[in-house]
Image (cartoon, rainbow, N blue to C red; front, side, top):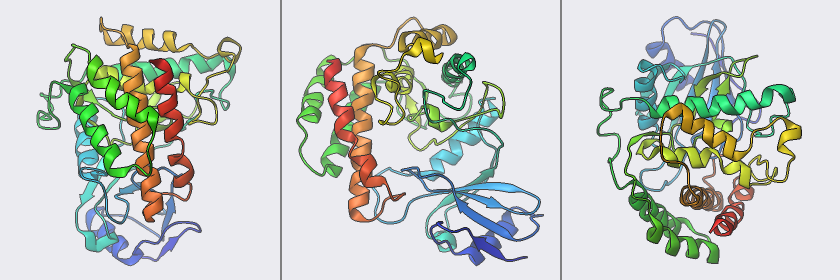
Length: 341
C-alpha cells in the first residue's frame, strides 16, 4: 500500500483508514491515493479518489445532525445498482460501507466516468446549433427512467405507491416547519393552496427527485446522457413531479440556479419549456401533461430544500461554503411558485 494525499481545499478525511478499506474492497489499486472534493454541491459530499491505475468516486453523508430520512446514501447505492441492470445510464456501483469508523459517516464507491456536467440550462459551453439536442436528450433520458419496471427490479419497497402528491405536500410542509429560519408568506400560501388542488392521476414510477441538468453527465462530445447522478431524493413517485422539476429553469433567472428566464430562447438555440415538456410526453407515451400544479409543487418543494441548506449552514453542518447564499434562494423559488398560481 502506498501513501495518500488530500488535495488543497478538500475537507479532512482519515486517509490511512480509507486507504486500508479500499485495499480490502477493491483489489489491485496501485500508487498513491489522491483525494479531491468534487464541486460545491449541497447534498452528500462527493470526492474523486485517484490512483495510478484507476479513478473512483466516493459519496458520503455530511457530518453532524441530519433531518430524518435525509442523506440516505444506502438508498442511493441500492437504486443505482438496480437501474444499472435495467440499462438506465448510471455509474457502476462498487461497494457500500456503513462502518462510521472509516471516515466518520456511511459512504459508497463507484467507478469514475469521463464526460461533461453542464449545469447551466443556457449551455454556454455548447455551440448554439447543438443546444436543443442536449435538452431534448435530458427529456428522453427521463422518459427512459420512468419506463423502468420497478417491481421487476425488486424495488417494490423503495417507496409507497399511490397518493404521491398528497403525501409529498404533507412531508415538505413538515420539513419546512422543522428547518425554516423565519416566516415566509409565500410558503404559507403554497401550504394552503397545494392540498386543495391535488391532481387525481395516481401513476407510479421510479422518481429521481432532483432531475435537473446539473445532475446529468453527458458524453464528452455528443448530446447523449451517459449518467444520471445524485439519487439522494429518489423514491417511488409520480413521473410528472420529475418532469416539472426538470423544467423549473424556464421560470428562473440565469443567476437563480442557471435558469433561462428572460433569454431569447430561439436566438440561443434553446427549446421553450412547452417544447421540452412535449418531447418528454412523446418519449414517455403519457397522455397526461405537466400542469401548473406540478410546477408549483416542484418550486415549493425546492424552496423547502434550499431552506434546509440554509439551516445546515447556520448550524455549521453545510456541505459547502456557499450554503447560506444558496439557501437564501428559497424565497425566490417560493415567490415564483406563487406567481404561477
